[in-house]
Length: 265
Image 1 (cartoon, rainbow, N blue to C red):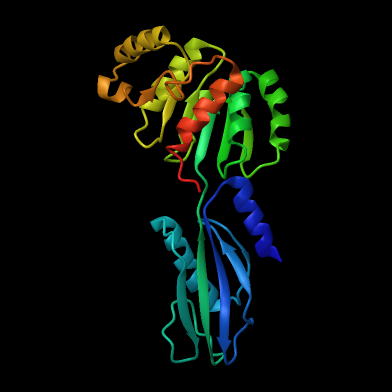
Image 2 (cartoon, rainbow, N blue to C red):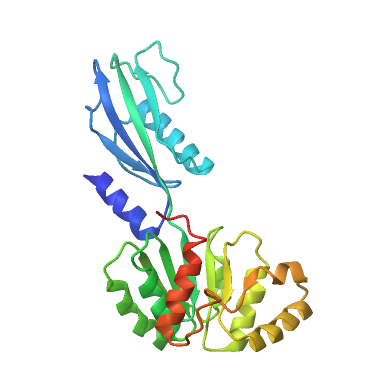
């Protein structure tokens, strides 16, 4: 069942797709009811019968992904020589009903800094259906963090060693939520600057004290960002009323604040 491989690949990559299922067949068709395939923006797994039927529904599925359709769609396709087709004639003589079920890409949370707090945030968010990216410029930190990937939960985790982590930030999909907490304040500043040069990110949070944030606000202004843009960064991160400083407490506070932003059930 290659379509199961496709579903697993979507889960592992945190990507969007469409599950296409033949729900009923009247007359003759290349495949029977229950045949499935998984379609993404660039790939497909399994087959519902090939030819015009499959090509047309692959196009329909990819348009759904592009339009971010969230509700299932039902299509009927005739397989006879009189039916209008785009990809060649199929004259099996039947008619099929097809269900196209969108599979949404999970929200992306990118954590820049695989220190104590970063690891605790991964643990706190691991039970949610999110795609976690844990990025650090230190090879030793990412090596130690890879064991976190074995936590049992709905989240997927990518541990990324990036000598220039701003490049990893620029590679994030639109809507990603960004948490900046590296081992180096100069690296944090670069990440804040990079984040503000994108206008399509979700929440951007910076770990630190009010004194650190005051210094960063001035430096970001010197780098050309206006105050409206700078206000897109939340610092300190987390729920304001939670003042504990242990990594676990900070992580719970940050996770609680993120849940308000994440579209998860």
